[in-house]
Amino acid sequence: MIDFHSHVLPGIDDGSSCEEESLDMLRIAKSQGVITMLATPHFYAQNNSVGHFLKDREKSFNKLKACTEYMKDDAYPAIKLGAEVCYFNGIGQARELEKLCIEDTDAILLELPFTQWNKFVLQDVIMLMEERRLTVILAHIERFYAFQTRKKIWKEMLELPVIFQVNADFHDNRKKRKVVKKLIENDKPLILGSDCHNVENRKPNLISGYDYISDKYGKKMVEQIDNLGREVLGFDTK
Image (cartoon, rainbow, N blue to C red):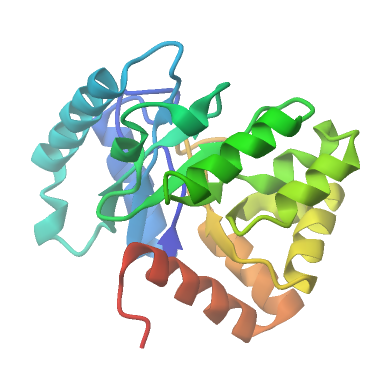
C-alpha cells in the first residue's frame, strides 16, 4: 500500500512534533502494510516561499533519516517527499510550483479552499493541468462537499481529469461515504491517504480505508487504487 498523504516529517507543520513521534507513525504504517509513505507537509504561499519551504523540508527529513536510517531497515516504509499545497488565487500561474510536486513525478497534491468554489478555482486547476502539464491530485476530496452549495461548480470539478485523494477514514461519515461511492460508481481515479498527523487522534490508518473498500466494492477496486498509485510514482505495475 502507498500512503499518498501524511504529515510524518517532524517539526515542520501541525503534524509530527518530533523524530520519536515520526518513528512511531512510520512503525504503525508499516505494520498495516504500507510500503511507501508520501511526506506531504503543508505549504502556504502566504506564509512561506517555495525555496524556504524546501529548505525546511530537507532539514526535517535529514533529522528523521539520521534517527532512523530507514533505508537500511525494513521496519519503516520508504518515504517520498512532496507537499500539501494550499490553494491560493492565481496558483495556476505561480512560479516554482513544479518544485512542490511529489519527488520524481509531475504530480502535485492540491488542497482546495474549504469554502464555496468558484470559476477562478476551476480555471486555476485547469491551468495547472493544461498549461503547466502537471498531474493534479485533489487532497481529501470527500471533505469539501459540505461547502459546495453551487453544485454546478462541484460537478465541473469532478469531471476534470484529476486524481482524487480520499482520506482513509471517509467511511466513518455518511456524507463522505456518499461522495466516495459516487466517485467509485463513476469510475473516477482514486488513491488513498491517511492524512496522519500524530499517534493519538490522527494516527496512520490507511488499512481501515482499504478494508472498507475491499468489503464494499471488492478486491479489484483495491487493486485498481494500488495500480494507479504505483503508476503515479513511476513504480512497476506488473
